[in-house]
Amino acid sequence: MPRMIVSIDGVVIKEVQLTKERTTLGRRPYNDIVIDNLAVSGEHAAIHMMPDGVEIEDLGSTNGTYVNAKAVKRQELRNGDTIEVGKYKIRFLQDADAQNFEKTMVFKPGMAPALNAAARPGGVVAPPAPMNAVIRVLSGAAAGREVALHKVVTTVGKPGVAVASITKRIQGFVLAHVEGPDMPLLNGVAIGSSPVPLKSGDKLELAGTEMQFEQT
Image (tube, rainbow, N blue to C red; front, side, top):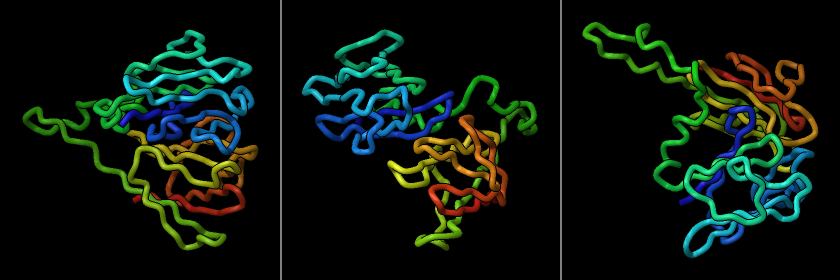
């Protein structure tokens, strides 16, 4: 099934499977793909599932819709195409590549571990140790609930109000703002627009809910 992988500054923030004949993208909370950014129009673009492929249509957005850096009104999407809306990049992937995407997308050049450091005698490279982490909800109706961070990207918060993403990278987990007027608080301090690393015991606050990050 085709997928759209949404990222900003190299950090994947959400993944959407294209299951409908028409999938909308925009700033308003009723869109299928919500991107809460002033550079994105309320109803920015639509993705159409056609019998012979997938097409994207710009819905008269203020700042335009770009595919592979070219402005488009309506265009067929091909596997690997990159859609740009504002500062966000959305990669279109077909089934085979989408299955491998979660393992590779968030890694940037220079982030791969040094193979020599992990090499075993005989030249066999040891795989990196798996990272396990959870988010524990401390307040609100869901207090006591734990969410295991198994996926490459896990989103937390209230869609249309405030959402943050926790992304698993080779060197650890990072927290990033996804949508909403208020930035997440990390140990009582707003994180800003850039992803920040998490360490075990960190306290998060989002949409009035307190959480704790724990890594084992």
